[in-house]
Amino acid sequence: MTRRSRSIIFGILFLSFLVIAPLTVFYSLGWRFDWETKEIVQTGIFYFKTWPRGSQIYIDGELKNKTDVFFGSALIDNLMPKTYKVIIQKENYHPWEKTLEIKKREVAEANNIILVPKDPNFNVSAENVEEFFLSPDNNKIIVKEENPPAGGNKWSLKLYELKNDVKSHIVNEIDFSIKGVELFDLRFSDDSKRILLQLGLKEDIKYYSLEIDKSPIVINNLDFLDSPEKIYFHPKSDRKLFVSQIIEEKKRIIMILSEVNIDKEEISPPIFKNIVTYLVTNDNIYHLNSSGLLLRSDLSGDRIETLNVIAFPYKEETDYEIITSYSNIFLRENNELYYLDEDAKSFKKLSDSVKGYKFSPDSKKLVYYNNNELMVLFLEKQYDQPTKEKGEKLFITRFSENINDVFWYTDHHLIFDLEDKIKVTELDDRDKINIVDLVNFKHNEIFFSNKKLYLLSEKTLYSSDELTH
Image 1: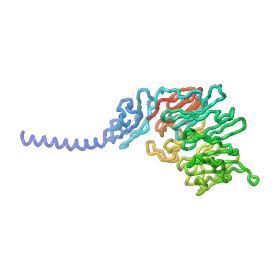
Image 2: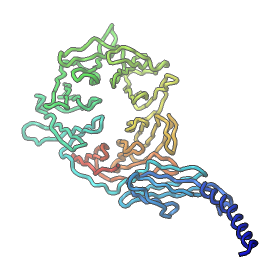
Image 3: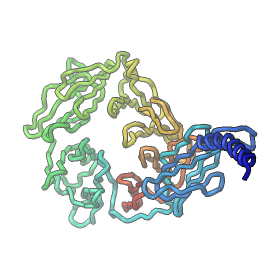
Image 4: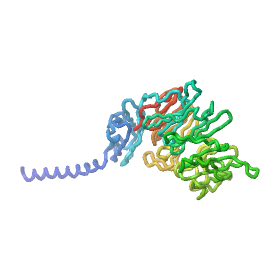
């Protein structure tokens, strides 16, 4: 080969290098030619994380990838900036569908995708169940079972440990030595180790506290309490209670809060007077007084702090409830719900029609609802896409049927009871919110715990197989 030929070849290769090298670098940096817009653009990426693992990902109708079997995640890159129709599916599960936008040099994420199973299996957990009560830690339920007529023992209470599926007896009606007594109410302590029973025979009301974490179960008769308004367990002692009572003082009817010693059957002098309602939780007592001020103290009533400088307009003969989760404080007045604005130190109305509410397992969100609408309040900033600011509200949807109850399915999903339908909804409001039917079932009550749905239907308690990871 002549020197001239070699020079020509070298020149061609050098020119090719000058052209190809930048193109290769641009390509590796995500630059592409968009034939639709006739422009050079940078691409974006989809990142998905799903349960169950191994789900198929379709982009604009084309199978692109599967989520991996270890983490349930998948990355799809080199996507032109535009909107895409995404469908994630797996056999025997409802698909997840959403139109998402890819922006140049950005990652569009969906980290909390849960595919809801179709036709979940339900097993019989208990029969002859009249009602049930769920513990605060979601690990126990107490069921009131209807007994056969013989023996004069109409009902009994049974304890179910949901994690290990163990059932144990608590008490029968005859254990209270009051023939024909009915169970009016049952309430757990915050630590789920004690329960408070309100029993009644005609107009005679009696209270008992039961220590269900002990064997045998300890039953404490609280007959020495004179017409208590509200009773709370003491967070630091299983032998003490807090009780509010209505008394007459200086020709005025007021409500007082006192501490109770169960062993000595003694009621302390009032810790607080002129209270409207109160809440005992962790190391604090919260109480709303008749001046409309919400106060927080330690369990002895000392170190008092006024939480609102602008008084709440208290109304007589109105039902009030204090609700807290970490630093978030709410006040319910009949069906209206208010939150405490920490900066303004005053209560602001959240909703004028609330049927129920529940905090998410991570305590970062609050769902509240009325007969037909579901709303979520973000208590902290959410950094996952779609991002949400603290205090932002998310309207899920409005239904024509009545919402009976709502539970958290995961930190990012809700399960709710809509007459004879049970549905699951996500909180991702990009494009449409995915809401799917889990099961149609003639039922009375539901609750969701330990990844299972429990459903009371015609006096039979059913439990599903595990529905999430």
